[in-house]
Image (spheres, rainbow, N blue to C red):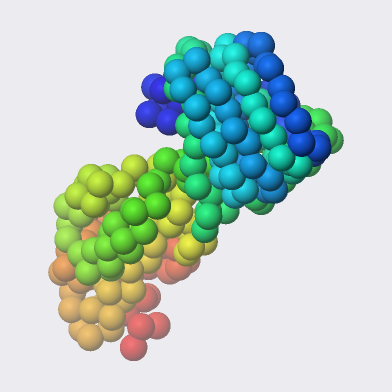
Length: 245
């Protein structure tokens, strides 16, 4: 399945903004998938494996090579058409409420319309961001908040990792990184490093040795710690001691 991560996207076919009046359609199997965000209107689908209803602010994943019958009310939607390596057998509907899907679909359509160099890679990146957003169940709001709080409390543990954090809280690492960046405007690993650096700076300013301050703040290797300080701050930890006071 595409949303399980084992059916990769192989090609973007187009990205579009579509509107139409109410109607009934019998659609033959098409050699491409669709991921569509419905801004307005409702649709009742009949697929070979059963019916689905899609409402405003829902996102529909329609696998390639799947025929269907649809009854539409007046519709306004944004869609990305693409091909995958394998044919999935189950269409899926996701609630997009409180997810940043509108901007991603609109950006994809704009990029595709202008056909600038690299458009395939750019739209594919947006598509995978959408997949990551939609892969996080709505009930995971609490899990995300708990994971962030856990990160803030345990950042100084030398063996702490974002991968282990996500496993502990039952979150997809890709989805967690995407959502974290949208909220905090940086990746979790950068946030973790910033927390560790600030803790080390305070310890060094209080007179602790550089090696001890690094270890107690989550840096197992003092040499690596020195490289991070130079890269992030442009000075050495010894100079940092003077500036930190």
